Each structure stands twice: as C-alpha cells, then as structure tokens.
Image (cartoon, rainbow, N blue to C red; front, side):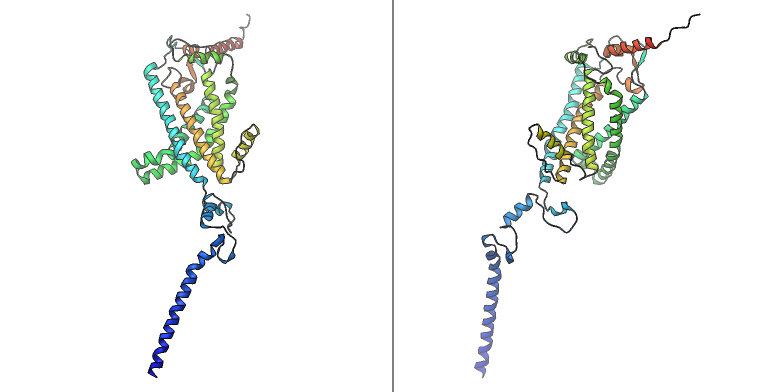
Length: 361
C-alpha cells in the first residue's frame, strides 16, 4: 500500500513538468512561426515584417482612427524632421549672417564715407516732401515692421541668446507677449503696406533716368556727384518694390500660419510653376503646407530685415536732412535740389502755374 501511494505523486509531478515544457515551447515558438513568410498572428491583414511596419510609419503614412481628425491618423510626421533641419540649419545660419553682415558693412561704410552732408549747406528754406497721410502710412508700416522683426527674431534665436541670460520665467513671459504682439500688429503692417502702395506706386514706375542713377551709384560714393532724380530715385524704387512684393508675400504666409490648415497656397503656386517647366509636388498635405508657410515666412522676413537695415541707415544717420522727410514732412531746398532735382523743378513749376495773376486795378 505504501509503495503504491509513493509512485502516484511521482507520475503526477512528471506529467506536470511535461505539460509546462510543452506550453512553454508552443508559446515561445508561435510568434516566430506566425511571422514565417511574412504572415502575422491569426492570419490577419498586415505588413510583412517589423521593418516594413516601421518603414510604413516612418514615411508618414496614415492609418485609421476613430477621431474626426485626419492628422491624428499619422503616428510619425517625417516631414517635421526636414522642416526642423532647414529651420534650425540654413535659415537660422544664413539669416543671422545676412543681418549681422549688413550691420557690419554699414559700419565700415560709415567709417569710410561718414555722414553724407548737404554739399552746399542748409539753405534755411524748406519744401514739402510728404504730407500727413504719407507720413502716417510710412510710420504705420515701419513701426509695426520693427516690432514684427524683433519678436520674430526672438522666436528664431531667443532660446539660444536670451534664455540663458534671462532665465525661463522671464523669457517665457516676453516671448508669449511677443507672440501676441506679432499676431495682432501684423494687421497694422498689412494696412500700412496697402496704403503706402496706393499713395506711392505712381512715383515708383521705373524710367530711363534710373539707369543713370544706378551707374552713378546714387552719388553716395563720390562727394558732389548727384545724378538726376524725381521724387523717388532708383534706390528708393528698388526698396519700394522689394517691400511691396516681399511684404505682400510674407503677409500671405503669415495669414496662413494664423489660420492653419485653411489654405493651399504652395500647392497652387507649384502648379502654376509646373506650367512653365518646373517639376514641383502639388499633392501636399495640410501639414506640409503649414511647414512650407513657416519656412517661407522666415526666409522672406529675414531678407526684408537685411535690406531694410540699409534703408534705415541711409534715411537716418547716413545722410544729413533725410530724416526730416518723414518727421516734419519738409526738407531743406538745397538737400532736395541735390538728391531730387527733377522733382523740385516739377514742384516749382506747379507752384507757379497755380498762382493766379493779380487782378487789374
């Protein structure tokens, strides 16, 4: 009896061990067997391997989600890596080089040429150059642009320059305030841009005398060499069209950024360029449109900043009497004759023709 009882537990223990080993082998090998020949467990539809699955996700393909948001179906947006590389790479590097390079060149030019004086000296007599509406349009556009430039530069470079100096709390405060200022003052800039275009476009049509002005370098390199010019010389005309076209373009991209996923500006633009021989992609997703808008907004803004620095210089410390044109609206007659002689002649001719003859006694 005792011998019979002692054999039964041994047999049961042996069966238990065999069962555990069998289940362990079955479960440990079943995934490998299921993955053979590119199959997935349960004969469900799917990709052939983990590598294919990762590649599918990594390329930015979308899956299926219950949310009513097509962007939520994309697990990894690969274009974001490209956007970040361009923004933090070429745009940041070349943008800083352009702005700082212009400041450096203007400093060298000022050291060599000094302030451009009125050759014949101030006459003490003035002539009206810009009326109140002109000056309002200019300062509305210029003032808002300066704030937009400062807040935009902070968004691009602030974390590398200001954050270590100010600390996270102060930097977060001024950056948040700057973001609101950037968004709202953008509309002031667009209003000033449109008004300036309406007021000055007729004076900025290119003409033959602009070629002579360009050949003479505008008279800023050689003392006393002042080429003829009307109300706006060739240099001012170039600034005008750069600001108008660039400002309009940066306004469109800015609106697209403030109201995201509502426009297809780049897809349509690429489609037009393809008509004349380009081969650009037109099947852009809403997120790709936003990324291109952001990159273009940064590029055009930095180009405008670089060019406007030269305009600010020559209109202030670089040339005697130039700032009066947008401050009081009146400039010295000798300054006007030296830099805009044809315009002075036109104004004088209009003034004489508008005078009525004295009545006969």
